[in-house]
Image 1: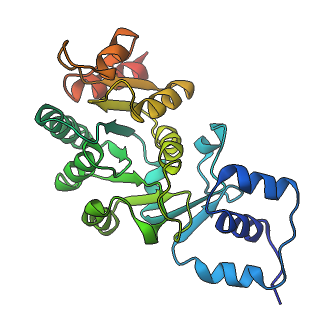
Image 2 (image 1 turned 30 degrees about the vertical axis):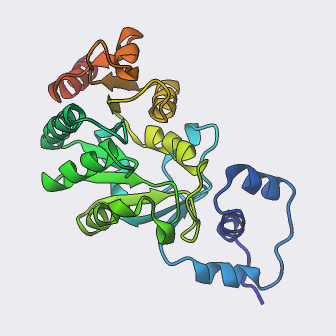
Length: 266
């Protein structure tokens, strides 16, 4: 027989049943779908990581400003980083050039030296470089992934994933542990990256049709700053277009740290 059902139990049941699919979870809750006897006990046994639900007191308030706030955040590592000041998203191309690699290394090194927390999506390219450089410089980093912990993607970054967890960092997901990677999950997780940062989003190399722009759009909707590293004029670049449209030009980390200090002063 089930124990007394709490709101957390109900949320956990539907999140696991629908593998984190926000719309399906919402429909189940709205329709007050029945939970079969004994199913809650089975569900509880499936979760081995830590998690926080939208009704918990330590659920970050900034997620509530999203159109679709995650019902549950599953996590491994130091959850206190979610509320540490100076959190910045660093995102960009999965197929970055040597220039993009160099600029990411330089920018993140400077940001970590100024005690910024680096947030990214643990994807190939700029994401992986940002996390790695933060760790190499004894900095703190948060990775937001688009699958469950038992089906980590991409597998080539599994070492970075483990380093983050084992070195004071944090990995979070709105998807239960046994959720496999699905194409729609990754654009959805970008809204979480934008919500977590409290400084802005730094873009390093992004093509015109890039998932990076989803994060940029959510950053702007939440009223935060967008910083872009410029590219050559003859390169198809979202960074250059964003700068034309008002994004902050970022040549060094000081362009970000100095800009934020000016915000505080004025």
